[in-house]
Structures are given as structure tokens and as C-alpha cells.
Length: 157
Image: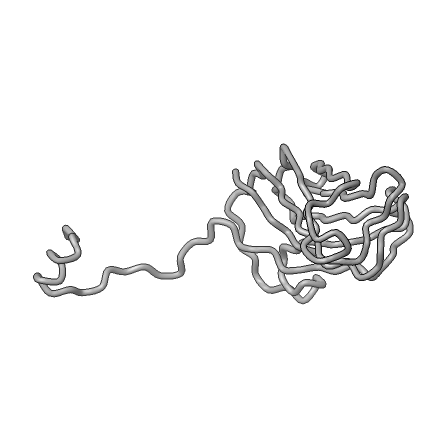
């Protein structure tokens, strides 16, 4: 369990009824808290008037929904989402795949919508390659040392 930080640059403002949705690969659990900060944009500070929530879908994916609140919009700009207490999936490799938009089997999907139900897209969706979780090291070995080197670094083999 740990935190995940995601950054997304909105080019098209999200209207009051709209939403930004970020979907994880399967296996991540929804966080206990979600916060949004504007990194570059009209306010340049913590985002006010923005709701952030997360849930776990039927396929085991985590969906994070960022919506304007109070009748405002999500202006164009760079946003940082911090998801606290996210549980990672079990050990998962992330090999290359020609059948996904991100080029690997595990992808994070970014979508913006005119409506919070997600029926009318604002922009073309984007995806980025996920990451291997607890990937096995391909090779590990101990470097040969002289007796003096072994003692100097405290190795006891």
C-alpha cells in the first residue's frame, strides 16, 4: 500500500457537467483519499471547486473521477492527482503488446467527458504504459572481491 501521483495536462476545459476519468490496470484498489492540485494553470495552487473520488470496477480496475463542483469548470492546465493508500496488485509483469494503445499489456487510461456519465468525449483518450509490479530481477550475483575489499565493505560471505 502506498501513494500514487498522476499528472495530466488538460488542453480542453472540462465543463461544469463534465469529468476527467483516469482508469488503472486491473488489481489496484481505490484509495482512501484523493486530492487535486493545479500545477500550471489559472490558479497555480491547490484546486478549489474540484471533487475527486475513486472506486474499484467490476474488472478490478481503479477509476478516479475528477469533476468541477459549484458550477465551475476544470480549466486547461496541468493537474496533479495524489491517491493515498492505494494497494498495488500482486506481482505483475508488463510485457510489450501490439494490441493496446500504450504498447504494453498494462495501461493507464485518461479520458475527459462533457458529461460525468462518460457518454460524450471531449478529447481523444490517452493512455500510458503501466509499470511492472514487484518484477523479478533478471539476474543477481555477488561481485568477486579481494579479502581486503570484502572486509572493508563489511561483506561476510
